[in-house]
Image 1: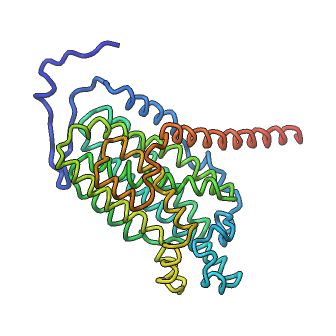
Image 2 (image 1 turned 30 degrees about the vertical axis):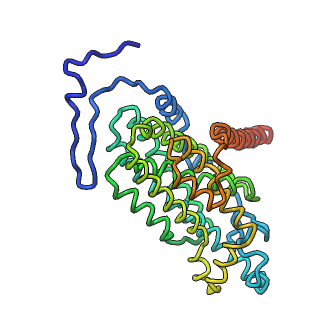
Image 3 (image 1 turned 180 degrees about the vertical axis):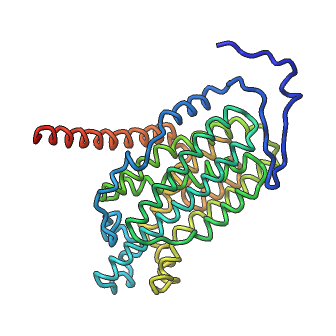
Length: 360
């Protein structure tokens, strides 16, 4: 395929428009040069799906145990507080924990929707604008999905203050790379890990399919941020790099602490301090919070934000061992599992149609 000849070099014709919250960047260079981004854009177009058709919303979901969690998966299992709860109170706790978790995913997806639209405006290159446009649609679908799921649970929670703080920092920063870093790498990287735990351990088919399908999209989004920043960040000054590592360090601590679910304990009238203390120190919760960073650690290393500040942060959090995780293999597994669940869904639909024809 040929390329256009520009009468005036595009470097001389760039146009930036201040919109009050940042700078909208127009790109007049429409030749697509970045193969990885174009491949993601192509996959993003082909992977669009209808949440009302791909997901079987008639599947049963027990409001008192939406994810089919066993006792050991409840964060305060084994504590004196848990032991004093009766069957009714334990069911109510499971409902509130699931509602709180999925509510944070819902709020995070709306944040991602806004961030993706911001990337379309602010990123300087047309290739990235193309892919970000497909992500806007993905995020709108995810908001729809989690809102519908919460309707079946019958309960929702407001946004957690730690998540709100990170989103505020990302949305108010006018630099386009900070939108990528905060949303594509940190928030979505941690969400992917949390999704993965639900997908692996849930006993509910609806929760599993919702999570797997969303993960399939999110894996592309994280790859998008990773590819763009991996090219951009080696050109930063040391001062610019240090500033971004400081932001990442603070954000990682905030994201870790948001999973203490303080709002749930307060709402149910349980001793908040004791519940939080148990979660901070129990072996199962320490392992859970460690797994949350399985993707963030290697991504930050890959995009070259791997100075003393970042390494020290991950050492203190006990997660630096994830630095050599094979990200490509992990993302490929996300794609594979979603495809397998989808193939099973299609096979079940075909079987039902065939059975109906036999009866006719």
